View 1 (cartoon, one colour):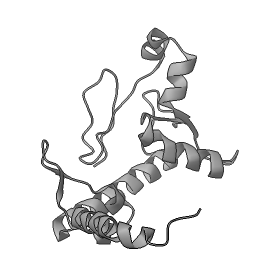
View 2 (tube, helix red, strand yellow):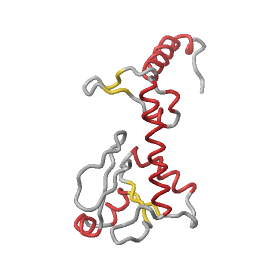
View 3 (cartoon, rainbow, N blue to C red):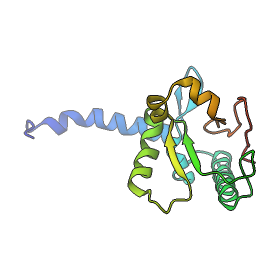
View 4 (cartoon, rainbow, N blue to C red):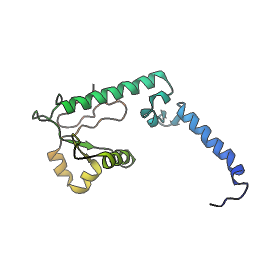
Length: 159
């Protein structure tokens, strides 16, 4: 690309402002004033970046609870209502919430995986909603709190 010779000098104040705003967000500044929320999804990848010890500990504890839950499902300690091991995972994220997991499943998945992963968007495109409700029991876990949302059917909370 060809830029005028003074392009980067002119852009420096805007770039500095953008990096300053990013540092503020990483330090825990409120990004959503209506809900009084910080932006911290990247803390899940690196809890050490969390702005407080309390948030960092909450993330680390949650990650450990999720890992224990997955281990218990794979070991057969947590089973379906009929006592059989689970064979499928239904990921309910849509849009941007599904893209990362879809990429990982497509790129790293293999026939040796313990469970098949399905994505809610794909299910919606393939089936009539009445069929999904009649044949499926779903537990929705909220992003950070990991509290199950009340839905019909059996659910298991991550504790």
